[in-house]
Image (tube, rainbow, N blue to C red; front, side, top):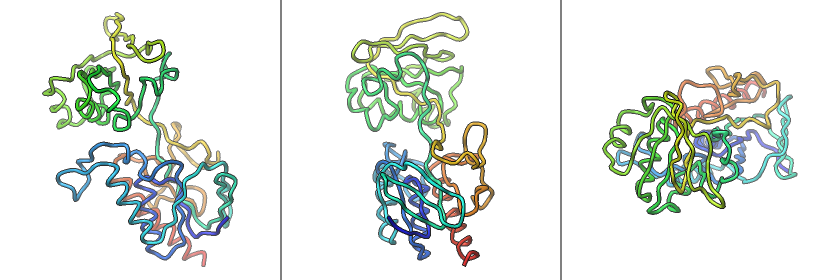
Length: 306
């Protein structure tokens, strides 16, 4: 049990940056994260587009630097599952593993989680051949054939990473053209380990105890085929992690929190930052900027209240 000026829900780049700014502003700050610090950034093998690291930096290394910086400035960090929250009123309550924490302001920075394919076999074989994190699981597929589903930046970049281990990587994408940025596409097209099956969708993940293949459908010819493989890595988008948030928190039809330019939500004293909010771009650099703005807005809110 504790009383805080600012509680940040989520310990990814947005939450950790908010923690840095909050603590540096002498706010008693608590960051709550259900897993390891860093969020999705901590599961990314290499980050090549974050300013200040021309040779790139590993996601876990960058995440740990952010965590150390936040805690060095005085932000507290706890790991645990939030079971409930009350965000209305001047005093807000967050319950973590039956312990109650009270705060004057809250920043929602829970991020987003990988979207599922929703096909037979996907849930059954999760952890037994189906994965949503190449950095976490890629090493288990040394000298094996794996399938990557998706055509955006994450799909192509993680397919490239998987070639470090797998003997073959097949990218399956529902459109005729990839959506990834040109640099990643060019690298993928030039990599002899990567092949492409376009204009096709997975209809079923196959296997017995573990994955043995996927059944796919060509959207143009309507023909089915089975691709034998040992692993399936899914990168088809994300869903915001908002399941515990109150229903009266304004959000888009697909669940992303709506904020103003100061990252205020419609609930006074509650702000949102990073991938969980409605924004034109979801990248590490924008999450970090969101964290700074949200913490600064929380400080201004507290100054007015006082």
